[in-house]
Amino acid sequence: MSVTARGADRAREGRLVLVNPSRLYSDGWSTDAEAGRNNPAFEILRGAVQGAVNVEVLDLPTQVGVPESDAQREKFLALTCALIDGTDWDGALVGISCWSSLHYLATLEVARMIKRRSPGTRIVVGGYHPTAVPGDFLEFPDLFDHVVQGAGERVLKGILTGRIKQRLVHAPATRGAPRELLHQRPPERPTAVHYVYLSRGCPFECSYCMESTMSLRQWRALGPRQAADLVVAIDRTGHAGRIAICDPCFGANPKWRHAFLRRLVDRGITTQVWAETRPDTFQEEDFQLLQQLPFQVDFGIDSASETMLRIMRKTNNPRRYLDRTADVCRQLDARGVRFCLYLIFNHPGETDYTIHETVEYLSALRSSLRNNHGHFVAGTYFYVPGTAVETELAQLAEDHGTVVHEPAWWKQRSPHHPLATRVDATTGRPGSEIHGDHWWRAMERLNRPLGAWRFLR
Ligand code: B12
Ligand code: SF4
Image 1 (cartoon, helix red, strand yellow):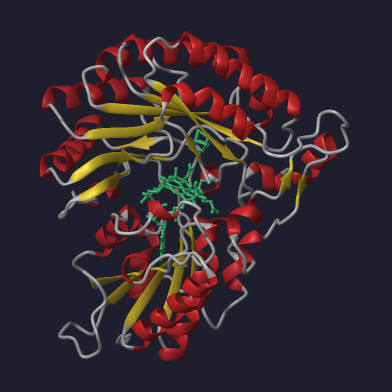
Image 2 (image 1 turned 30 degrees about the vertical axis):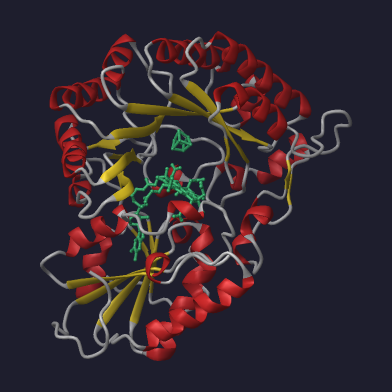
């Protein structure tokens, strides 16, 4: 359902309008991953208040677009303003999803437009960015009536009924099964990718990731049968080109993972499924089950330098982690299971030598894969608030000479990817400092025989 024009026939009381404000300065940064696809966060928020209020959605990426140039930005703002001016906001509570830091400037613009059009309308903002940096919104008391940190479904009802009055609301963390995920719905129309969540949280705390700020460092999942049946329901529609299980750490519990995969095998799915996880806990049973499924499993290994794995807090035992990863990759390759390793280069502490170590490891692994079922995807480190890198920046500067040139890049009115990646990983160590992004060429060389190659932005 989308926002309807003024005068529409609907109940005036108890109205919630969820807004995806789009992103103003992505300029190619993950832009394709947004438009026209399902938004599980909205399905979950909608599910939480279902029956109590009317829920409408204003999805600007789909309805107006994701601008990629100054000319497109100007057009986007004009069209959005016209859309907001033509909408009846009477009696509505507006929930803006500032999902990532890239949504920040668009969130401000949209909030301003709504308040100008309808000054009495209350606005609540939630998502990853307000969770990490609530001050960015609290400093605009005329725009945001409530700023929510954490999962929104637990507080939205309280705000709607007036039970929650304070401006900064911290959603209490829960430890039980994330039953709210059952509100996700299969696609009603054909879509290239359908996103679904089967679990929340992650037991790890990688330095560059803000998951632990968002939720407890605890993995919580739907029951394996429930989870598999959610995936089967999507498969049976025949609408999804691919099902992307977007969990922060898919199947972190091996027993859960095996029960889930076994159920998928028993129910016989045909849609290609994708998930990302860690290789540490993979066992023979995983290989046997995965080889019976149309399933691609990806691993965010991030680096193959023991030094970097420690700095990135990936593991306390980098040697074992790397040996296990190589073993798991060879097993998957031998069984014909497609997989992919994600790498992050230029994280604080990275040097020319640690890049060399990663490339050497990948070259050796590459030549031991007989069937070419795996490939590598590299990305450049980008600075994110709410992460261990943020809290320990002073120490990283002392230990490695790290410089984050744009620590509030999301506030700047120019393309965000070049700003967020403007990081000198190591300085003051002649011979070790990184010059240019030469890891790109190394990765290209490694992937060339495989055909499939991506460099993430
Ligand atoms: C899955 C995922 C994706 C998927 C998203 C699929 C989808 N449609 O949901 C894909 C691969 C497309 C993706 C892309 C990107 N991602 Co991403 N992604 C994640 C990941 C792994 C999990 C998110 C999750 O668990 N969601 C759980 C669902 C159930 O809840 P939710 O979506 O968070 O919504 C809840 C709350 O946020 C809140 N909420 C949300 N909106 C609102 C609104 C209101 C009013 C309220 C009250 C509450 C509220 O309540 C919701 C319900 O509980 C996280 C975290 C991580 N561990 O790495 C990163 C993460 C969110 N991504 C991140 C980033 C940067 C991106 C990209 C910008 C760049 C990139 N990595 O490619 C793009 C942007 C895409 C876009 N559309 O804007 C960062 C964001 C950090 C930041 N401050 O910007 C994170 C945190 C990873 C990190 N580096 O720390 N991502
Ligand atoms: S990067 Fe993945 S494994 Fe690491 S803390 Fe984030 S969600 Fe967990």
